[in-house]
Length: 207
Ligand code: DC
Figure 1 (tube, rainbow, N blue to C red):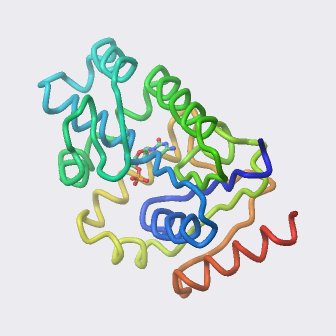
Figure 2: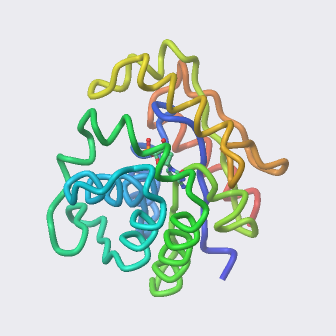
């Protein structure tokens, strides 16, 4: 199973989603944006009027949620594709994703999704190389300068991105860290195509 998984982690604005999607297209593999799953849970928590500090209610919602990420992101059949990029979701997703039982529920779905694919998968997020698929054939950590990452996030202020960075790095459970054996790519001055090419060449040498 491990030879068909490329795991990509990195902070917001590092290029994960665009790179992972393009890479999956080039390889003919399936693609999973795990951030969209945490965002969908957050959107639903807010829509249901559940308080973010009511961990029990947030966990119950996450554990029972039916989430799809393609072609549109939906939760329990409700299309939240646009809503998941809203300020309220940007502001609350780190808190929701720091709840251990929420992570357990999402990781379970991510592994089940990958196991159900009949082809290779490219999965991106914050804990994919360290927790979800630590035995992936190729692990990549994407990074970029804060200024460049903030510039790329059209839908989020630099302050909000900075707060999310701090929270995602500092949380106790599955914080965003570089896996020791991940290929680190600084995308600050690289085109999407150049990053994809670099990953493809790493994949060829790792096989
Ligand atoms: O990749 P993104 O910016 O869409 O992710 C949104 C948030 O979801 C991010 O701030 C932290 C959380 N997240 C996570 O905790 N673990 C993942 N594997 C993916 C995202």
